[in-house]
Image 1 (cartoon, rainbow, N blue to C red):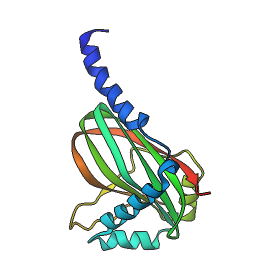
Image 2 (image 1 turned 60 degrees about the vertical axis):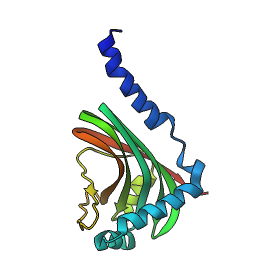
Image 3 (image 1 turned 120 degrees about the vertical axis):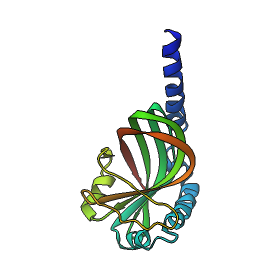
Image 4 (image 1 turned 90 degrees about the horizontal axis):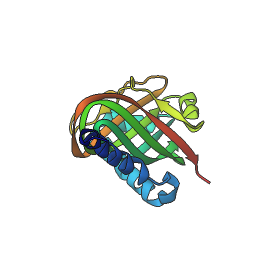
Length: 181
């Protein structure tokens, strides 16, 4: 392998290792994830009446409080979260994302998925749920109230926590659901 190819693949392999290799199932750290999810819910709801109303009125929602993403042309992200129906914890979820494009950097963020209908929540709970790249997440910023767009009964919001990333990419997210015991 020539040195240029090594320079291209080594960062990518490191990103994949960090994003996927270091992840444990959401069930393994249930107390920590539930606590982190409650903090994330408070964080995204703060000064956001529209988001607070979504938590109160949605059939269900999934909160991924600590999603990590890294990218060097090819990007990968991963996170664990909690799933709620009518405000009650019903399970845990793992999220994986892969995308490609002109991108570089790393970031941590909160992601929340709102389920507008029982059918949308049931699809998520059915396992191997995927979000395609054409679903756009509303980015929550301090003091800026946003309206969430729903596609097929699912709306997504994100809030940055740390890091710096630049670029444009396409990809998708895949979720796995684990009911509480």
